[in-house]
Length: 113
Image (cartoon, rainbow, N blue to C red; front, side, top):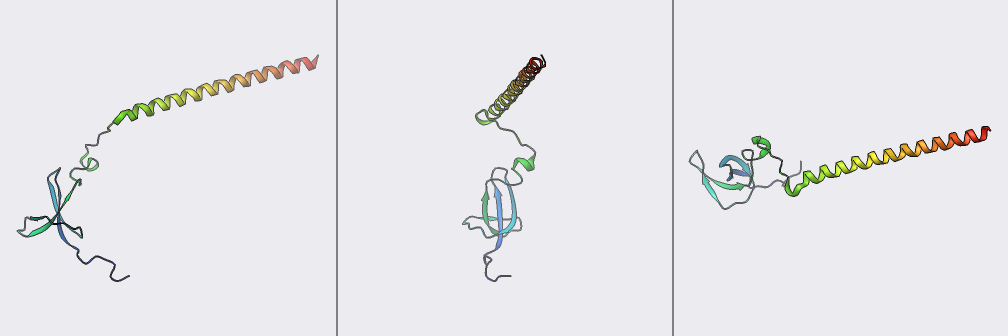
């Protein structure tokens, strides 16, 4: 292993999720000037986090689909338009096949005379 590549200031830190009011003690090298008194009576550096397992929708089960600016509706409209275009092209191809078959049959009948 390479020497002297890991930071030397790895220490106990309290992480605080202000949205959920959840805090936990862990280890980190994150720089901070804030401190907090922990349950054991000692004072630890405090790192404020925006989101944690206590407030993240994946972990809380409160995940919601937010349709901003009608994205879902636009996607559905595009999908319907694509399906209609596909059906239209299939009908056009089927019509062309029938016309070609009729033309071939007509020419065969003409050549048979």
